[in-house]
Amino acid sequence: MKDINLISPIDGSVLVRRTPLDRDAAQAAVARARAAQADWAARPLDDRIALVKAGVAALTAMKDDIATELARQMGRPIRFGAGEMGGVNARTDYMAQIAAETLAPRVIEDSAGFHRQIAREPLGLVFVIAPWNYPYLTAINTIVPALIAGNAVVLKHASQTLLAGERLAQAFHAGGVPREVFQNVVLDHGTTEGLIAARAFDFVNFTGSVAGGRAIERAAAGTFVALGLELGGKDPGYVRTDADLDAAVEGLIDGAMFNSGQCCCGIERIYVHESLYDAFVEKAVAWTNALKLGDPLDPATTLGPMAHVRFAQTVRDQITEAVGQGARALIDPAGFPQDDGGAYLAPQILVDVDHSMRVMVEESFGPVVGIMRVSGDDEAVRLMNDSPYGLTASIWTRDDDAAAGIGARIQTGTVFMNRADYLDPALCWTGCKDTGRGGSLSYLGYHSVTRPKSYHLKRA
Image (cartoon, rainbow, N blue to C red; front, side, top):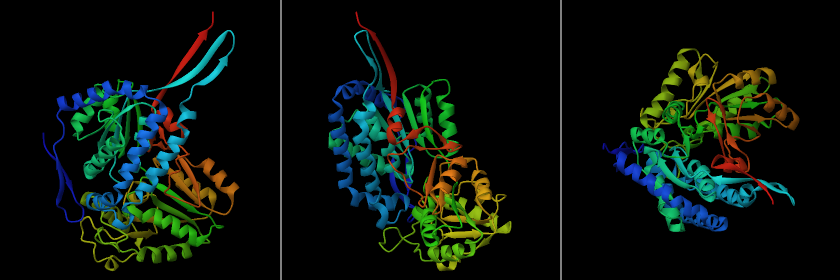
């Protein structure tokens, strides 16, 4: 098998090299997980919860090492690296808190004549294909409810964050989750697709590109295996005339630039009411120029390299094309001398943009955002919906009713008011259109990794 190399964006060196499992070894790992699942599901729910939480506690104890590893693997500045553990713990705590109520049977009738109820059973074996941009948070979204519900889990992490998969396995095993019940595997695309096509799993959760999602769907065709797909995004922000301007700039531009723009629900396009447009743009430029691009291992760095040179090149191409079509770039790259034409990329704000430009309609997944002037709610809604994606939308206003009304008209999975780029574990994380299907977190997250089973018992 050809080795998988993790190329560090810091200097282009090979940071990690791993040999993927061949087909036989992968099938054996799956068989071990499936064989161990029944005993895991038979454990009391409280025991499973305790072991999962112990695993997350062990992971949290590694946060300093994880922060350094993330900087080296995918370029996130070390000052932010450990922050992912806060979300990991919050999501784990909430999913553990609601487990008993959510997984409990729903009794329809319990009379002298009948007992009728709907129970929920684990699906069996859950396959998590995790992305590199938030390698712990995204994986935890499915791993935690799947394990708590009584499933075994096989994790395949992205080649850019191979060490994250190994850390997760190390932590859960240290917490007491049996090694066969939670397994981290290194697989190539062919073996991954072959396992899915052979119905090796009972549920597949994939977070990644639209092209990757299509490959997963093709592999699963005819198997009837359930899929959870979180794919691309082009999340919009809308600043109404009654918005708190400073808060809107802080929230939306941070949402566009944090993690070098490599966020599933990052802000990729902004529509500003004409009455606030000039002031918003001026403040957005000042905010962006205050960023410090550099070595992610330097505590002073606030903007690290993109995870891979090819990702940065996609953004550069979009910017160049937009400028060629009449857009204006407001950030002078000379202010970011660390931009090396490779993975290190200066942030950019574009104006005089429209939806004929790729940068406004195709996913960028980098530190660039286009800002358009709009006349009001109707134009903003039309433009926000003019996208093949639908993950989140962010509305900035002091009017709750207006936000709710606008939100009802937007084709999206989550509507935010006066915030962006955030996951609430009590709310379902879901998308529409090419962003994918299914949902994680909230009580619905448990529905994704369990199946209903009806009992209709007639008493003699």
